[in-house]
Every structure is written in C-alpha cells, then in structure tokens.
Length: 320
Image (tube, rainbow, N blue to C red; front, top):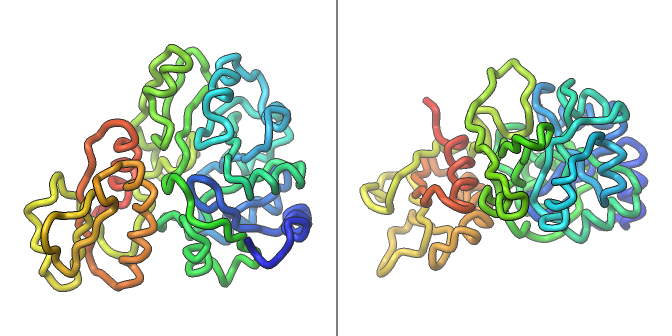
C-alpha cells in the first residue's frame, strides 16, 4: 500500500489526478472515467494513441448500468460466474462516458476487478475508473509496483503497492455488443471454453488487427505491444538455441533438468501455464534490467490460458 491513506487516494482521483492501482491482472493507471480531462492525462503520461480505447472499472452492477445500456441477459450469467475477476465485456455505452474513453466508438469496455485494494477504492470513491496498464504505451505491462516506479515513477505521483498481481496477463475481453454473436477480442485468464460453459455459445476468437490509424474495438489489439527493450524471438521447443551467445537469454516454460546455462531462465518449476502467465512480464522486466540484447522464449501449447500467453508473446516478438 502507498503511504497515502485510501481517503487521500480517493481525493486525488476525484481531483482529476492519476493513481497507479494494482489489479489481479496487471497494475492499472487509473483516472475518473467520467472526467475527460483526467482521462486525457492517461494518454499523455503513457504516450498512448487516442485510437486505443480504455477499460472502465466498476464496483458493482449498478455502476455497470450507469456507463452501459441495453445490457444483455447473458451478462448477468457471466457476471455470476466471473465477476469480480479478469473478464472485460464490451457493451453499448451511455452518453455519460466521454468519447476519449471509447476512442469515439459507441461501445464501452467494462470490468469488475477482484483485487481487494482496487475494489475498496472503487467502493469508497463511488465513481468508475478508466485504467489501462500503468506503463509506457507498447512496453511490458507492470505486475509489481516497482515496475510502475521504474517506468512511470517520474510522471505518476500516486502508486499504490498491492503486491504482485495474481494472473500476470491482462483480462479477457469479450464483445457482447451483439450478444447473439459473442467475440473474444483479446484472450486472457478466462478462456473461451469457460465462457461457452456458462452461456452455451462458443465465442468467436477474433484475430484481425485494424490499421494503426483506426479506432480499435478494444485495448491491446495493435500488432506490436507488450514489448521489452530486448528483441524477443519465439521458439517451439526448449531445444535448438545456443544460450552461450553473449547478450542472449533463453526463457523456458519449466525448470530444466540437470545443470542449466547461466543465461537460461524459466517461468515455472513444473510448466504450470497459470504460473507461466503470472511470471511472464515480471521475468521480462528483470531481463531488461539485466541488459540482455535478445530473449528467446519457448511457446506453450495454444490451448487454455496458453492462448493468452501466445497472444502476448506474438505481440512482443521482434518484427524487424
């Protein structure tokens, strides 16, 4: 927790200031979602293009209904199953939501986070909070308060330390603007199979990427994103990489047997993909600090949460 009290944090938010707050996914850079001037500071501090919409975080269904309209019945089923939690839904927006939040589109992305610190702030503040990841645009998402301090500390006065994030990758984004045709715009901790199990419809996984200058349907859809300073290369298996090359690091899904090379790292002791997701950005932050020129990362199987991990890896991959 930051040295400031919850009340001081709330007063800062109501006064139009930015606050970095932990969520169960990654740390968010929060502002009053109904204050366009405050929201504008998010784009300025992050260097985020205005075509990239923000997620509006709410405390309860009453706040959902305050920012979204024509709410489909299916959302109540999803909410009972996954909220509070790492699921974002795209709904038709109410006029009260400023266009800067939604990139001028008629829809708004809404999430009810589960992190107790964020929930307490939402409850006590009584306002929805727009909060993209608290990092420079395009760089690795922060999963610890120290990541925020290292990248945005000079620009963000208020950083709430709530420990390491539980999931480590951003929320699943489900488009419900046409509820009979649900679409996963961004894979995340809540899988398509889990969503289908609740609503009885298999959501379409949308892979398209809009042009750089067009308003995006949801955050995180641009081709290059989540990138460290080092060049990232992906590999299908743990073999075939000469880890002895100077300035190269190898990242494996699980701890290797026997002796390891000094520049070999792993994301899980036993290859648990939930643990891999939780540790991914944190390890990449560490390798950037160590000054590696290139990072070779083993890809998981493209199933379950492995789909979300591969989505982040593909966007982090060196495009040169």
